[in-house]
Length: 406
Image (cartoon, rainbow, N blue to C red; front, side, top):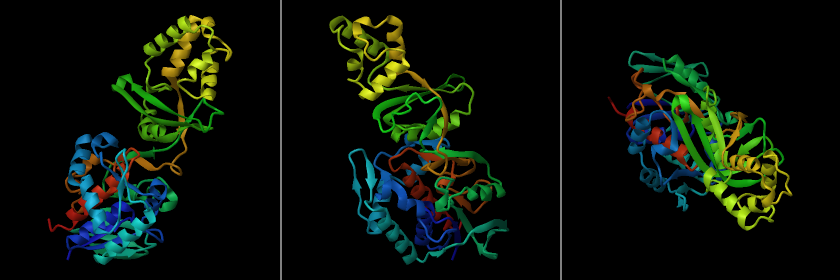
């Protein structure tokens, strides 16, 4: 019987153990904390957004799109729905495509119960100190003990929520075995602005668009969604979804970020709208026109940022004021000064380079018999169940491949 050592008891590690055990292997999970699926229990605010009906590489960053596509073809949405039925977990699909199990603790319990029923052993409080390839097998050292395995799957997670056990140690293991690490950074995280033109507007939520540009790199990207203003900057789904990409690109010279507070309008269209209102309703207060599109508090702030008194009526609006106002509403330049870091980041961007992994098996191209799964890889998804789907997809593929005699 093939012995498969799995480092990490998160969703990728549990998925790998189930897949390997189903294929006849002896799977042993090494979990450094006193419980498994720690971060999984927190997912979706306890509701467990496990996947999405709309799975494609378009919702992921990091490794090449071909690599991501190949993995997703190997484990589709229907595969995870079939698996949920296997473990006796109910699920429901929301209108936007997000798939929830309803209770992450209950799903966690069923996952653990199921993998143990297949023969998986879980060693708790077992910090893996070293993995070494010796001949055709691996030596795994933990608690001063060395154990031998035919195959090893590294599923230690990234660096987000370090209190759950994912503090980035897996990157050291990967490097020690010859792998390249794309510098890990926080992802799905709130962003700080400096200066913060929205200071004092915390709690205000709007629909907005963020435009990311780096001409020298040929990058021109737009993302839309709900934006929440905080005392330090911006949050909400839009800010979190673009954060990983933005934080990484902000290190590149020439990266610029723009905010459109009225995403239904271009500069030209909004300018025409205001000019039309000037001709037809010249005595109307400008702030009353602007708060047709954005909340009153934000409208007053944008007028202030544009150097326009809040009591100004449309007929008195000067041309240069109108140009500044339109620019601030549709194309405001913002400066990202940082983020709240790994302690609040939902996921990690960066990780083991996908160029060194076979997408069909998750096996290392550098070390035969070594596999990687989950967040440790240089792939991260948007909000909406994409990251948990990635964890299960890579875990199932890695477990099945590791159980093979090849």
